[in-house]
Every structure is written in structure tokens, then in C-alpha cells.
Length: 177
Ligand code: KMT
Ligand code: NI
Image 1 (cartoon, helix red, strand yellow):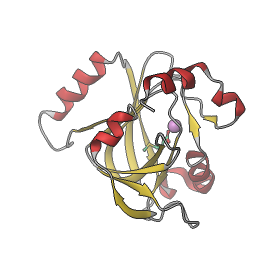
Image 2 (cartoon, rainbow, N blue to C red; image 1 turned 90 degrees about the horizontal axis):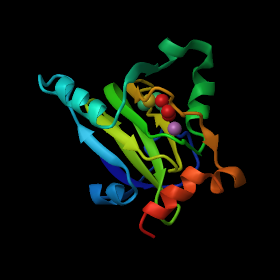
Image 3 (cartoon, rainbow, N blue to C red; image 1 turned 135 degrees about the vertical axis):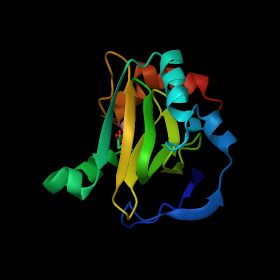
Image 4 (cartoon, rainbow, N blue to C red; image 1 turned 180 degrees about the vertical axis):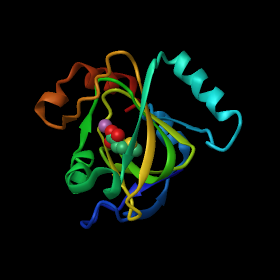
């Protein structure tokens, strides 16, 4: 995983958009973003995933592949959808099994922080944080999604409604200003 400020320049979201301003993991901790690395090739990884799932009460999981081969004609639409800024009322947990991608999250100044994820990275975004996702120019990521019995993963696109969202307000209360 590598974390840096997005350059905010126009152009395909799949480009690196690396401003050159690298950020330390503590920046993510401040925002309530948690990060682990469990290499899929390591013999201890699956037990560590089970542990985490148990502690955080994730009882279900599935797998998603974002690629033109897996998604066919809806691929470009999906890419656009994942990249619409939004929040969720539940945590968003992604364990990267293969491939690479970028999760962008808003910092306290509302600037985009880009988190480059690769195989073995596990990212937990807290409920209420504004974020978006894209693959990079390799156009391939395969990830495990963990969830509780009733996942509230509906993407709520940023607007007046989400600014007044209870989970969003709770998130802001927890986050240092
Ligand atoms: C999401 O919620 O943005 C996704 O599931 C994207 C694919 S997971 C890396
Ligand atoms: Ni999301």
C-alpha cells in the first residue's frame, strides 16, 4: 500500500494522479481508515482474516472481479459508478486477492488522499467517510468483500442528504478536526 495526495488534475481516473506528496499511515488512522497486510501466499493469512472477521462481526463474504473480461459491456459504466464520490452506512472492507487499484478518501480539509492497494492489502473504510474507487491502467482487481448479515453498502452519492446523514455526522464527531 502507498498513500499520497491526488494531484486533482483532469484525465482518466485510472492514471496514477500522484501529486508526489506521500502520506504516512498515521494520516489514514486519523481518518478512521484501518489497514492490514495479509499476503495470500502466507500460511497464516487465512487465520488472520478469520480472526478479523470474528472480532468485527463479519459473518458473510463474497468476491468481486473488476475487469473488462469479468464485466463485459458494463465495465466502463461500473468504473464510473465506483468513482462517484459516496459514503456508506456500514464499513467498506476490501481484501485484495489479486491486482491493483486506488481508493480515494477525503481528508479533514476535504482533499483527496489516494490509497494504492495491491495483493494482500486489507482496507477498512469507516461508515460515513466520503470515498471512491478505481482500478489502475492494468484494469484488473480481484477482491474479497466482507459483510455483516444486513450490509448497508448502498452508495449514497455526496449531496445535501449525505451531509445531513446520521452516520456521516457520527463519523465527523469521531474524526479529529
Ligand atoms: C467498491 O465498493 O468500490 C468496490 O467494491 C470496488 C471493487 S473492490 C476493490
Ligand atoms: Ni464505497
